[in-house]
Image (cartoon, rainbow, N blue to C red; front, side):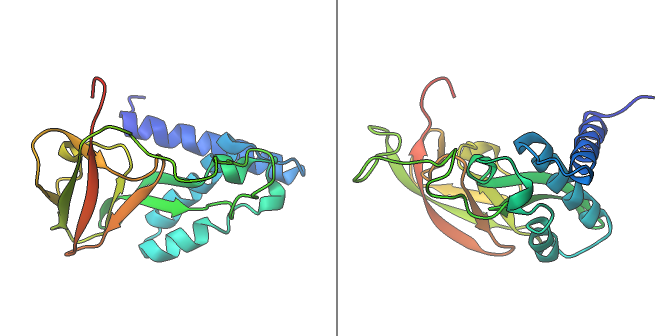
Length: 192
């Protein structure tokens, strides 16, 4: 059988979700990879069944309870994203806190130093306007270069060069259909 890369990924996701379901059935707790696979598999199936995007996101947060997880998983997975096929087409589904908010004191908790932490110190900053010309909301992840965004997003940048959102790593910003957002951006560093 010949599979496209997308079909191959979908089958691997389903296999990971099956492992998670078997572990839950025998009372075992889930680690991050199998818990993520299970939630992503459910998202893909709900989308396939044609549920509205908002319902898919809400139900995704109910798939796995915090007491079904190994300590530290909520902190290790503050958000997840999966490309799901809805009847109207493929959409990136973003779910914040899929396993509930992480414990401030538990294993895997992130503790920062007192005071303000500078992100990408010394890098040039600018402003950009993201305009969503498409029919669906578009999420922009923290480290995606602005010149590689969903084609439905038009970018007006006040500076020359390659930039990304000036937001903490692992976060994302939503631009609703037909909307525009002014955002802070930071020049890419290194070999990007």
